[in-house]
Length: 327
Length: 247
Image (cartoon, rainbow over all chains, first blue to last red):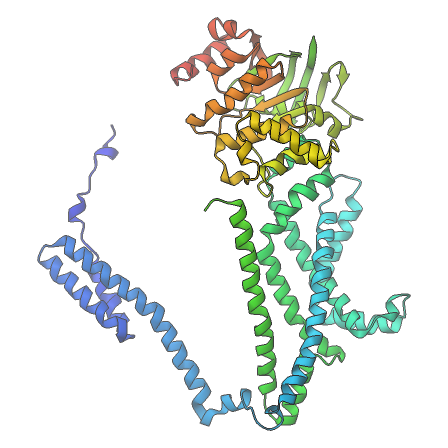
């Protein structure tokens, strides 16, 4: 055998990193609640090491290290909370009064009712937009990935659409679609309501993003899956339909959710074209009550709808995976 | 009677010429084993037969018909030629039964009920009847590979290609897969298999082909190839196999 295999480090004599633990535990004193046990443990580790009781020194050193990590984790949280309390109380509660003043025009149930009425528009717009984006983006992604020389123009058009609508700011697309199409008076499109124009604009913008998500998912499916499907005699289209896309969609649900949350929030943009949705109504309330509480209330509404959706999707993914995988 | 015939088949990936003029004849009901070092072109050869790879030159004929080159309905060809892969390649989002019935239902247009009946018969024959509704990831490697064989058989192929189907298996799972191949051979299924299981190749094959540098370097009945190879390369290859304790 080589020398390499013969070289030995006697395990029992390895020195614990007592000094590191000591330094870390002194820093931990910034959060004394866990800092003190950390320091005590590290001091004991040093004593044990001096006494030659390496095993005990290691044990106490490890305890000191654990306490130090607790100091970091919980200490940071506590100091952050302290910061928040200070922020909301300094200058005689200015911040609190600005964002959470529930009196005057805002104290009434009417205010909430008005906001909810606006929010219902946001909800309708994003539900429609999300439903359409789900299908439209998949179609774009599939066109973008069509094989063969003959389909080059289709690939090009799909890629151009994606590039274009990812580069233009969403609010600009909104202006162009809403005001542009209203004036252009095109057949069919001229009968759209403003909200429908808004849905169209959001679909165009988010369709470009989401189709790239789909594309990444489709490309992530290993070629051996395609080989297996084609070897059974399935056509390219059948292979996509039954083998590739179902796996790709499962894989991209988390980033898809990400984009949909983005879409939900961007429904606030449509206040810019005069729709009386949540943000616009919040602005009115603020003006009449001279605070920013309306914005805080609007923010709460968005949070209230987004978090349950996120959890529900996560649960859906879990149950699907549980079906297919061991453990 | 000749069933599969390859004539001067070439296949190049970029600069890398993998097949450099392969000639191979497989008779009906024959089992032909391809042996040779990694990278000698065994897998590529099999993938060319069912057109997962397009060949650059040469001709492939099946049952007298040319099946390579332009104007061939590849999907049609592939229903005739089944292939089983080293890494199983089952569809992870479908149950075992769905994996098996997908081809028959969508390609052969067999009704759902008939496809399921047939799949169940085949599954029972490989001892996996009770696994029909499991998902592939819940099965052992050996079970997955048996399902993959059944999936290929469900299409009713006239030729079965097996691409190192036991190479990814734990040693104790190899036999359950090889037993199926044995019984297929006994039933007269025409098969071409790339394999590193020399003992099995010796036992089951009607002909052994040693591939080296993209050509069939030596071929003959198994007793001759394993017992008395004439070519120096073949001897060197088999010597290494013996040294590794694999023969």
